Image (cartoon, helix red, strand yellow):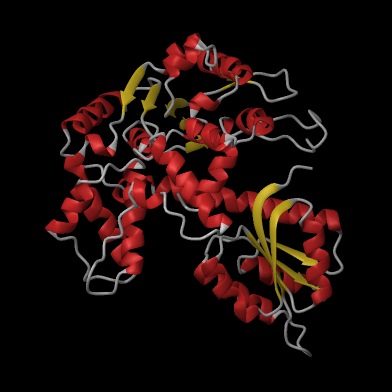
Length: 447
């Protein structure tokens, strides 16, 4: 069975209960954590993203009135008001269950529990948690633009922003072209926020990080019984974006078979889940992005010509950072302020010498590389003086300092990305890796 992406926290002072609950729930959910001491709950929740808490109601010996559980539930609700909490007790009383539900519990389970009932309760709580997070995300959509530096002094970038202003209010398909790290995701979200769909979902699908055997089920969903592990109906990511915007990143990585299905979806606005003959009408706006040369891919029969013409109703070429040197200073200041607050170093600043150093570097990793450079510099600087830690030049990269395999792997990945100017497909081919494997390593090394 395909596990649901969710993090469950179980809190109980009985190790046998923790073990049995964890073993059962691990069959259905990707991550299950356990705590035997309730005093550690708040610290854990402040450090980890949790979807549901399974909480015992009695922790002190001799006390069986459930007040411990109610107390800790209120503490959790103070920190995470919308986090679903399922309370557990071996002492079942109707009054206790009613009080727990009145105080905000999503469910109440008696020990020893029925496994199917436990799964159903936790699964429902996870779905509630996801809906709550989506609602918060959509309600705060107007605040998102403050997270990005969108002002530009570059004529090339100003032209792009002008085009975005014109195309955003329409439902036209948009194709964003540009090297990795140039801000395609930020601009796609900006288009969404300027559109009439701004209060609806913005669903980002990174096609480069999906393995081929998961492409169709993740994008289009499936019907119960469609294949061995399809134990329930599953709505795909595109269907979950109903009335909103779907951002298909790395569109050049889509297999030819799925290109045909995507073309049909874009043309007819109808979607069928795997194993289902029923067609569902779909109302979404599409934005696409890639760092590949799609015209070349079409010429090499790796990308359908009719799909290419369908997705590029409006084609926007995002300039690299070296093509918009005028913006480096403002972007660096933006990242500086962001990380000064994060790492509590308010006195650091960029002087003219440091800015000159930034503007004389080619930035093959574009804005993402600048972001990482500023963050790294702030972390390793003292509280008074900013020490700018620029990326190494080509000559210094060729010097082998030690034989640590992980360090050498990171260096080789950086060199491949720099050599191919952020093109994931070419870098992966050069390294002898699949695109998905390279993405995993980039995430590991935070590149």
